[in-house]
Length: 314
Length: 265
Image (cartoon, rainbow over all chains, first blue to last red):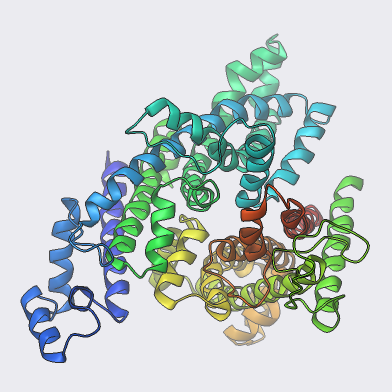
């Protein structure tokens, strides 16, 4: 419990620091809400008057508190680019699409990497392990966006399994949009599968050289009995922490891969908002993604402690 | 043991090969990388253009050679910035410890938990895009990983006998850190640098692909790929040359880092 409270306090402090940084950073750069509303032709007096009215001349901490109050209720103000449209309404659908895409990718990673990782540890040094290892190393060297282009060429343009660029909104048809997201998800998942397989393999191998494994064998266990009954439980613990990193990487991967497959998710919105200098949107997305990463790390820390009580003392 | 040496040798060979190509690309390319030729648009690979030409009739081989140059330039500068400041911070915090060490490492860990591409995007949206800004952004982003590795190495050696004897000989703190302890961390720093190169190449390519990295007319492998995507159905070779080059450069660095790690053990 003490551990939990300590971690919770760290989480809250981290979230506050992150939110302050993402607020402060974007207040430093030239251009603000008043300028965007009035346009470049506005006179200095008009600008100053509107700034006063909108409270933009207040000191930074005061503006931060106001912004944060709005942010926790999902109110990030109005977009600079689309007049009169709130950031929240711009984010809604892309957020859903990205969560869907990341979910499919995560599912793929779990389904393929865990059996493969266990198998290549079990047959370490045999052909299955050697082949998996070499393929993993090559896959990890392929940039996700190039992998996406290869998939587009092979499965989209040559085999016609999907129509590149013809994304169907989940609002129209949920399953059709899932179908379209399968190949983008593969582009995100494949390099991560390679990473997790390698990590799990090494984790299982490290456990296999422990004394308790020898004891288990000496009690007459078969090798699969030892593997599934004893080793796997311990080998999965570091993998759980590793998965937190993988989830963060999936989010990062989707920023790039969404661009390749023209999936209208958070990543595409982020890039176009950066290019259009639509800072309230950038700010909101940055806050969302960083918060997700921090919260996932927190959840994994807690899980880790439940799985392996030894870490509490550290 | 034999196979691990293979990683270092083969990886080193790939890396040196592309480094030479990139250097050659700075002084000589078969064609001018930016020269357009309206008579030779989207040509398939042939004797005159081994990798074909792009949608403006530019020679893809020449552009890949010049583009590898910018890739290496960005990667080397990034790793130098990140490595220098990271080593400095890691060595000082690891050696002296205390609350400053605690604070800096906390902050470090938070930074490390974010994917570098996301942080790079945030930096670029603040700084604006451009070749120098991407070097600055990625360089700053690589400081934490170097700092953490160097710090743990310094802590490992800090209380060993040879350091104690140096202290008895009245060597100053700075001399102990930089002349006695850091040389022992050499292989670890090199391994981190190889991984750093790897990440830098990938990050630069991704940023340029997204249009936020190296700006035209400077050739860049990532940018070439984003242009190639529009012509994927009728000129697939446009994507192959820059894509395979990026893969091989990254593969080379990752084999070097695997080989170095094996060397350490």
